[in-house]
Image 1: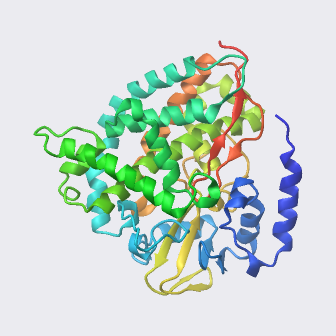
Image 2 (image 1 turned 90 degrees about the vertical axis):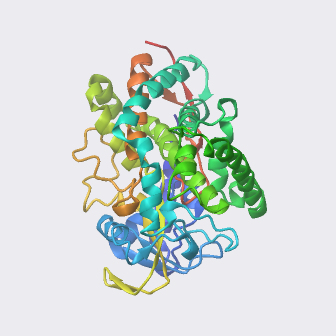
Length: 422
């Protein structure tokens, strides 16, 4: 794989350190698509870790929280920093106020707590044990179907396929139509500039199509005398969710689709990319497969598949010497906190046997910590166990094509070749 990206990264560093801080606007999807945001966050952590930006018409003004410990403070102080969808929710972009999608991650207690509790049995230890065999069998089938010694897209053939199959199982979704889940996941977080949707109206239309499809599934299951163990049945029969208005149902469906897809999908790709850039770490892994669980945590930290979470201040609050005003938009940049070398030693490096590797921000902290984090870790662990059984080497052929987004930090395409099987 050619490393022509080095010059671009040096240019990004020069630009990041020459722009006045008052002109900083790190919530620029083009920076993330070019993987050029790192020096901007590095400078903010050093010089202005709680930074106020004027933003643009898509974001409006916002505070960037860039250091690990300050992010932890915001994440765990939900009494002050609200996730409520009606105040703006969890993402930095402004959406139409007449198309609000309430979901439990974009709610405050007590409603958040009771809705989250409704779906949490899907990731209970008993259910994870049941799912483990299913994931392993499917991962094996997907990997066994990969071509040998010819280029293919790892994102589409492995990362998307595995996570979409898992989502279809969790929803008990019609199997032959499972790629609809992939599409709706992409649309949910897309902007017109991404090329995924043509306009905000087109995005809204596709999400309403998603609502119609899932409403039919709800109607099939709501009258079952023996409720199923899938997520739709849990929502349809749960005391806290069975009377949800349609847009709240859509919001929770989108949350479960994006949460169940993007984190794992982009970590599967990000892990292979990280190993390709760090051959000494790959050699370490192939020599000792017991490092896989720790490596999974390091992949999730290094990749940070969701770059930020947004909150809205409910009152004035002092943080790192700055006064955040009531009503201000506050953005926790997990992608920056996970590279804070005052907390994580040599944070830019990918080190598969890193001590305390689970001490990352990627799943959030406090009441909104990712409900499916153990399922995501299990899927990644199984993928790498099955990859190492089959392939002595996987070559990444070129720099991956990254997503145009400041929320989902992911990959559209990554071309690879597998020279041979074990």
